Length: 203
Picture 1 (cartoon, rainbow, N blue to C red):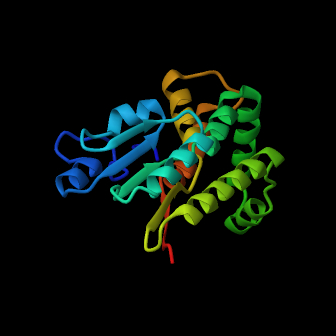
Picture 2: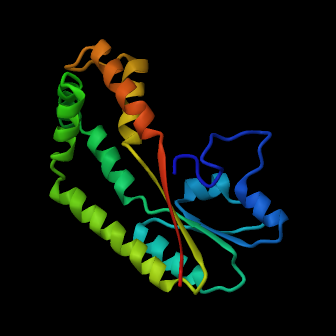
């Protein structure tokens, strides 16, 4: 999540952080994420666990799930986000992606939906999604009975939106004109900032 466990919103001097609220309510939290996110969002009353990989995050989350004194655990699997970032950092792949998106925008709505449904997923992305699914299943299996698992994920490619914004701000040279980039950004922006949330209780 772009803004960490802070209600999914940008930092505010007025609003309290989720981990602080849990601490004030007598609940113990464990925060498992990359070191930058841990430093930014971890509270004094929570346990901090900086990690450098999804496998390490999974291992620590499973251990914390077995700790009866811990009431809330936050962790993040970042391999998918790293993949998207790598894609937008590659100029050639970025231009191909933008050309594809632009071609979709010139079609009618029904054609766009059909093309999106037929869009091919690369082998690399399929493998990343399979590993993520396996990690989530592994984590769920390790949870104690009556534990609640909340999975939050994005509905679009936030890294691409951020890259397009940066291109417009810096007026970077590209094979696609500025007006078309703005059009693509308008189409992607709303979708990319919508989150999906799945909740289940371990039985």
